[in-house]
Length: 201
Image (cartoon, rainbow, N blue to C red; front, side, top):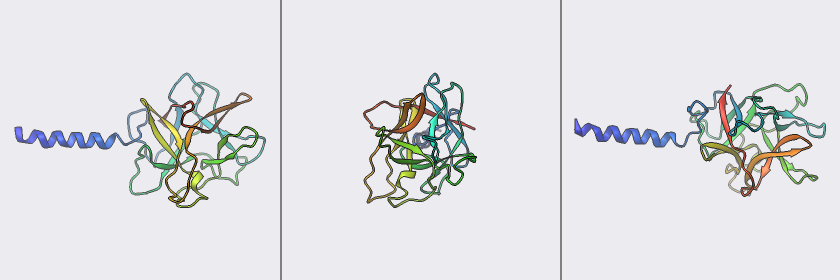
């Protein structure tokens, strides 16, 4: 019996180590590409989830954070570079797309895309109109984001590795408040962090 304990103990360690790479939802289960999730604040007393809104009355729509506590926003799905598994690991490149149809700007997809820096506010805002599963070139670089560990929860970042010859400006996604509207945008790594969690839709 003693000889069986070591292999069993080793198996438990191996399984536990593998799970440590998975992004977990609020139920403690790995998030997967075949389910929808709400991205909600890691600090439950700070605003709500993410939704779509127009900046300057133009298309495509941008990603905004609801200012209402308890508002889950619009659910999203994730797409991995490799389709060999459905589980999402942290620090890997993923596409993020809202699971909704748009009444306005319907010619654009709901796939998240990092737009060019705004000339007025000098911020690169997260917009829509990207594509899923496209990698390896400069054009598709801005469609890829990543989930990073942050304390006991997570944070969203932009630092794609899908294009080996590209040199992206990496940073964290946080909220830029402009005239009481909360826009998701790119911040430097040494700026403030927006903790997030993932809840099944």
